[in-house]
Length: 582
Ligand code: GLC
Ligand code: MG
Image (cartoon, rainbow, N blue to C red; front, side, top):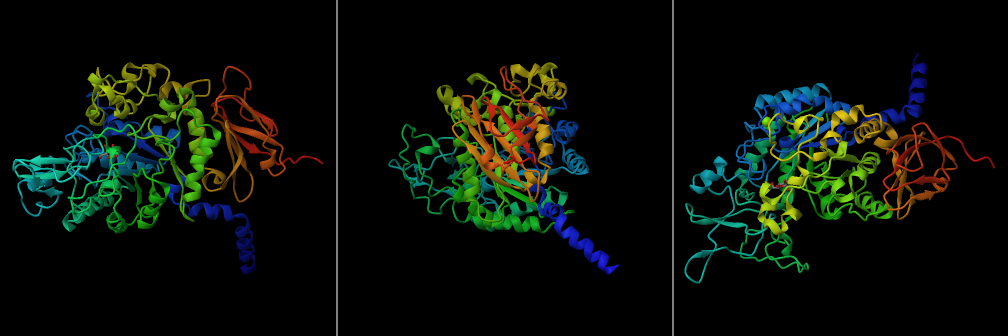
């Protein structure tokens, strides 16, 4: 009996290693994270703005496309000056989005389907209508020093003037004079978003309590907003040096080098505190709550955050400046390689194509690139984050200045608003061919629906006979469940001006070759130098066919010594165990 058991264990230690290995990965390493911008996902009550009940009604969409975690941009009470990133109560739901009970239902329904829920945590600032700020303006304790207040300096005519040259991320002034308190307050973003004072332990405690509130309810993780802006130096007499970047006007954030207001070392302590607050709560699967931070700096700087207790710093290398129109195979490999080579040992990589603050990938690469981009994102090693709409290849909508909603765009006026406005990437998700793409029954949604909604929508793409972005997305998400894609090595194969290709390998077979043409011309390449003697492969997934040859089909066998790909065409190929006869 005993011998039998040890024999079984021995056999298993050889053959089950892959299975046991796989269970070691945490959910946030094996899931695709899907970002929802609640205003634009699905409207349930016909007011033209998406809401929680809308999201609940579409949970099956997450199951269909195979995402196992959703991240919701803010749904808390807010005057909506920055569309929810100006919070007036951190522990409730804005009536425009529903109620706390709706959120609880969303959480329960997601968990029933094994989908994790990540919420947005906005620690840097509150709304100027938050009760803490109102009390702070009145000088009431304990809120008096909850924000960053200063007397400023005395101007030539005896008036008070701002203490330094600091600039807002959205452009212009960071110091706002408050008549009632007779002081200036600091705002890294809008003047309606006063910065909290993290040098005040009571602020730290209150924000830890926010984390406790949601963790207790059962949320699985947080996405930390604007982490770099959390601290400023105490000495507000310090002016920031000019960046000397050519062509940047004095008003624009990039005009200065933010040595006194960005990425200060004190941030580490705050993150450690949030981690501890989250760790007070057990989870069913034993995996601690997840924390990802928003961070647009160099890989060295973002990776430092891994040591502070955050699980992932978002890797925006593909987003900002990211994959531009001219970035070919080698250029994309280099961008991907930054993540792999800069990451400390045993840390987990991640990749993002877009979010609610940056241009959609189809804006930069054209609608035809959607499939190639999703193939890249979903077959790389590391956690992918998909911005809603990417799964159907949604495109940006042109919004005239007169209809612009985003304060960042409006700040720059008619001349320059298109460079900054985030409205075009935030338009309603296109569900079907009905009026307003089935997003709302309102006559006018808060942002316009793209004209292409009759063909580019979830329903049409589900049933389309020709391979649609949605179908490919679903297929790739299923493929990611395979160990080779979840945790196998990634080795670069053919890389040139057009092609970026790589081999995904697992402990044993099968191995996969992913090859995508990111260039502007056809490319025929020999991959056999990278396939360990194998010369034949079988197509598992392809990005769809163009007008001209080559036409690819699933299950088709292809010789690996001459694969022809058109621009934006990509293949996932299973390498067959056939070696060249000598
Ligand atoms: C982050 C958010 C952005 C918001 C800003 C201020 O960058 O992603 O949408 O405007 O913080 O909260
Ligand atoms: Mg609504």
